[in-house]
Image (cartoon, rainbow, N blue to C red; front, side, top):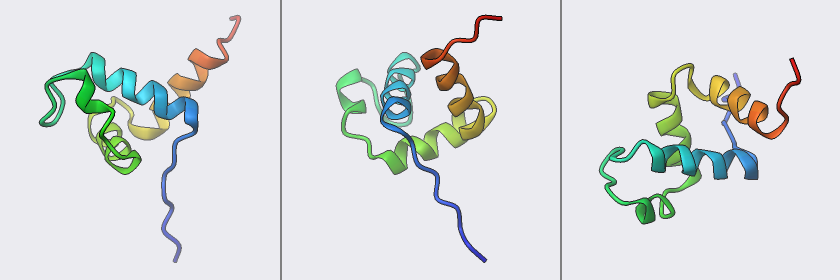
Length: 71
């Protein structure tokens, strides 16, 4: 059995930080500057818990921001 480890691309990581800043207070963070100290693992965990649809939906949403569909 293999365990799949979620990872974020550079763009996804940047979008995640912006999303967290917009959602402050988040976890024990109160200031946008504190978001910069979060690890990728902490950000992924937060997305899984707090983003509607989890990490899969977050990745789809980010992809749509980076490559908007023309429909």
